[in-house]
Length: 126
Image 1 (cartoon, rainbow, N blue to C red):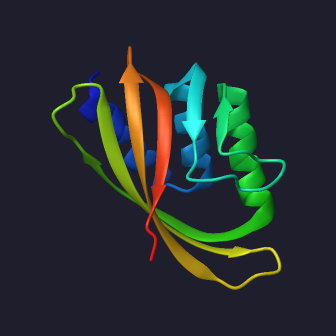
Image 2: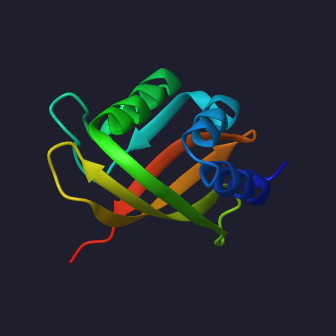
Image 3: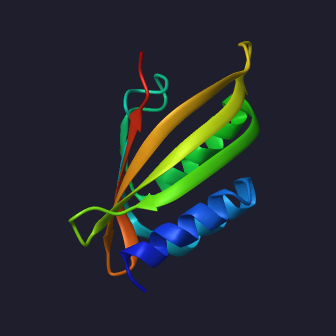
């Protein structure tokens, strides 16, 4: 399996919903993955975390703090590097105590030995 196939599998599984997303993390994330968000999500959830268990915890935190109405993934976008791909995500969610909104972000994923070893999220601002 190559980078393109890993990216295609991510899009397919994320578009299945929370269970598909969780299955993708279990199957394709390296145990020592580095995950980098655009900023701290809370005092308890820093921008940079390491390890697949921490990533699972981040996903649990997200679903515990947001009512997720839908997530759509598009891609993968492939460039000149043979170890990376990008995915565009549109998230439709209502934060606890907040207003429903849609957020667009791009995830840049680095792959080694058919496993995601780093993910970095970039947010649409402005």
